[in-house]
Length: 330
Image 1 (cartoon, rainbow, N blue to C red):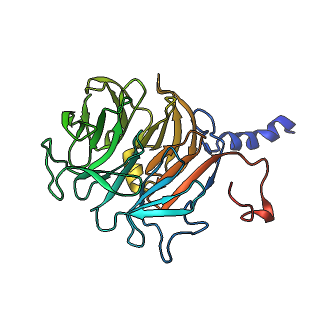
Image 2 (cartoon, rainbow, N blue to C red):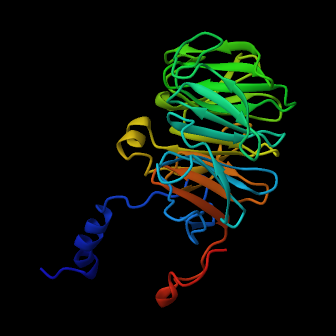
Image 3 (cartoon, rainbow, N blue to C red):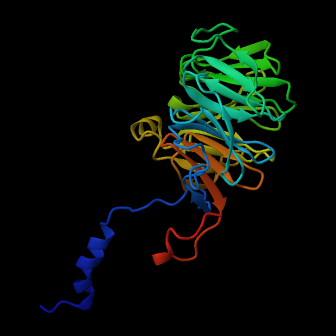
């Protein structure tokens, strides 16, 4: 019996139909950015012999200066660069047990969390210590103590400072700007208002507080006084949250907490999220522990790989071929 052409093609069609799925699409569409993977080190303008260790946080002030908070012994813990990556100043040697979070408040002050010595500190732009919360090397659950705090955020009117207290405790603590204790919420667990690693937080223009409940693979959202509003459970194990003055929500996240820890933050994604409903508006791959977004749409990522990534809008129309690596970063 002579087979028809259709029968001859069947084995090929069947084989193709059995092929496993390949790359998944970018959630919400691809964010079209390019990246400089060694901001602050290419070109290297730091003092001779300096290099980053693990970079736990990065933030940008209103003047465009970039603050890098890092754990290595070959540079000061806080290193400041101009917008193009030129070294400006640094401080903090011997001051911290384990650097974790860094934020710039609306007044231009620099706040850091030290989850090794259980403290939160506020500095001037030139590194003068102005305020310390918590007792050094004394973990606790009182209004005067923390247990491995992770991050800070600020109310829209500038009157309140929120601290995620974070690895050892499972709570958010609110203070006045000058450091007076006001209130706290959160207990260990998986229910609404309960936490398992309060890793990061941010505040929107309405005063709602977005809390990365990382090991529970979710973000919980609260009123300014800690009343539970809603939660997002579809974004994975969120490392960092950043909300712009225009209420654009950005996260650096991982598929789940186990993948995050197993890959040591390498398998992350940057996502832009709709503040109203949590819808993912765009995504792209990036390792990362911390995220900061500037008014001119630059994305800075602090990575435990020992890098600061500077993402800038742009997309290649073709491969670079033999010119790859020769074109300067914008």
